[in-house]
Length: 396
Image (cartoon, rainbow, N blue to C red; front, side, top):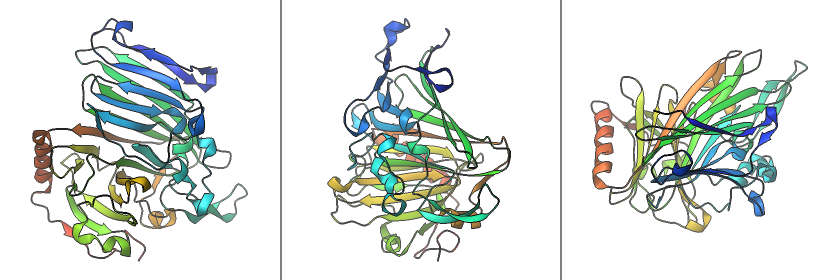
C-alpha cells in the first residue's frame, strides 16, 4: 500500500485556508470514479460556508466544517438518505440566533442529515444554575441543542489512503471554548471506502480546562423519503421504550411505525433502553414499508447509552422527518439529565470517545440481514413498552 495523500484545507493556527480543492483517481494514480471536492458557497444564507463533498463511487455525502463538521445531503446510488427541511441551507452560523423564540433559534439552521448536539449541553431550552467567574451561583440560559453545530472548525484536512478499497477521510477539530466557560475540543474523523454503503464518524471530546467540566453529546440523525413513508418502521433491540410526554403517549400503540405526510402533525418522542452484544455494539434500522430500502445506525451503547426516536411526520412542506438519536444523554433539560446522572463529568485533560456508522441498504436481502441481527440481540430479552412517561426518563 502506498503513502496516503494528505491535504490541509483549514488551519487557523497557521492562517491556512483553501477556498476550493479537488482530488480524484487520476491525481494519485488510482482507478475508480471517486472524488473529494471542497468548495466555499457564495450567495444566500450559505454564503461563506465551507462544503466538502465526498463521493466514494456509490455513497455521496457532504461535510460542513463551518457548521461543526456536520453531515449534509447523503445519498447512495441515487437513493436520498436525508430529508427536505424547510430550512434551505446550509445556513451560515452568523445567521443563527440561538436565543430566538425562547432558545429555539438553533432550528433556523437545522437541515443536516447528521448533526451533533452538545457539547456543553443539549436538549430543550432551560435555565441552569452554574458558578460564574466570581464564584457566585447564578442562573444561566441554555438554548436548544447547544453550540457545536454552529461553531466553525479551526482545523480541517482530507486524506486519501491507498488500498484494495481506497479510504477517504475528512478530519476536523472544533473548539467550543470561552474565558470562564467550558473549554471542550471535538476532534472528528469521518471516513468511507471506495464503493462502500457506509460512512463512519469517530469523535473524541477533550476537556481542556484545568478543572472538571460537564459534557453532553447526541447524534441527531435525520431521514425522510423514500425510506420514511406511510408504513415505514423503526426496528431497535430494546429492553424498554417510554413516551417522552402526554403527546407521545397518545401514539404509544404505534410508536415504531410511521404515518405518511400529515398536515398539522405534532411531534412525538420516545426514549429507549437499547440492547447490545457482549461488547456493547448495537444498531437501529429505519426501513420502508416494502422492507427493500433502509438506513442503519450502528454504535456502541457503552459510549452512547441513550437512544431517542423523534417522529415528525408533518406535511413535506413543514419537514416530514424522523430522527434516530444515539447519545450520552436524552435531550431533556440539562438539570434533569444531571439529576439522573446522564451528564458526563470530564476530568481535566480527560477524553470521551464515541462513534456512529451510517449504512444505506437498498435490497430486501440486506434489510432482512439487518432484521435478523436485531432479532438476535432482542432474543431472550423482554421488551417493556410503557403507556405513560416514566420517572427518571421524563420529568413527571
